[in-house]
Amino acid sequence: MEWYHIVIPIVTLIVGAIGGFAAGVFYLRKQLEKMQNDPEMIQKMAKQMGYNLNKQQMTRAQNMMKNQKFPRK
Image (cartoon, rainbow, N blue to C red; front, side):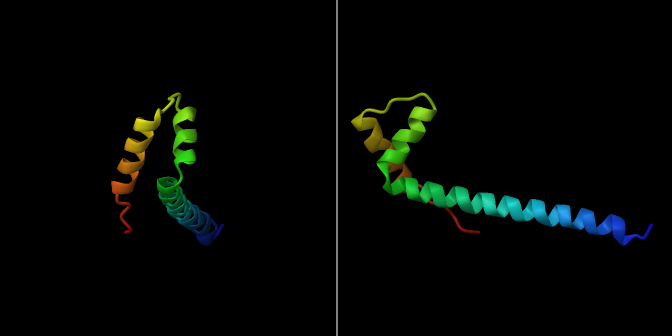
C-alpha cells in the first residue's frame, strides 16, 4: 500500500471541511444581511424561537440589526 493512498483522502477531508465551513459562514452572513432589510424574516425567525414580537420590539430588533456590523475577513 502506497503512502498516497492514505495522504490523499486525509487532505481531501481537511480541504472539504475548510471549504464547507467557509461556505457556511458566507451563507449565514448573507442571510443576516438580508434579514436587516426584511422585517418579515425577523418576525419569522422570532416565531420559530417561540417569541411574538410587537411593533415596538420589531422596531428595536430592526435597529439593532442595522447597527450590527458584519466584518469581512
